[in-house]
Length: 128
Picture 1 (cartoon, rainbow, N blue to C red):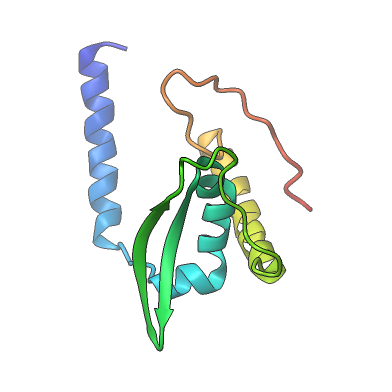
Picture 2: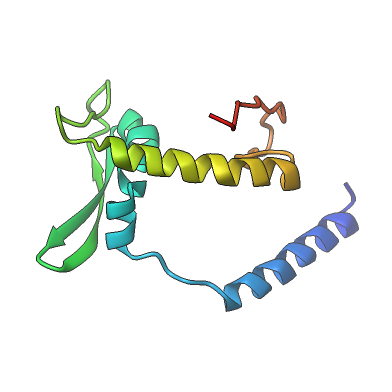
């Protein structure tokens, strides 16, 4: 792709960004925690890397407490017995499946490929 084409693609991306920023809403730490996003981002991403996103709940106040760093632990983190919620897992899975189908149809991928990553898409059964 030429520099001119790259510039055009970049400017189109910026225009799209400006449009959605006007309608941007913020998800609260409480919603992230209660819906199950924190559980799943930890289980799927941070824990295997030896980290954990921390959200505290003191009374009615929910806040991000940063990302705990336990990368010196070679096998990473796991949730203790009885800590994970099946209900939260299922909610996030349902949301993922709903959005995955739409992203695959519109974009040709579910997770945006990184530069240099193979564009092969493994299609999952989204009906389950």
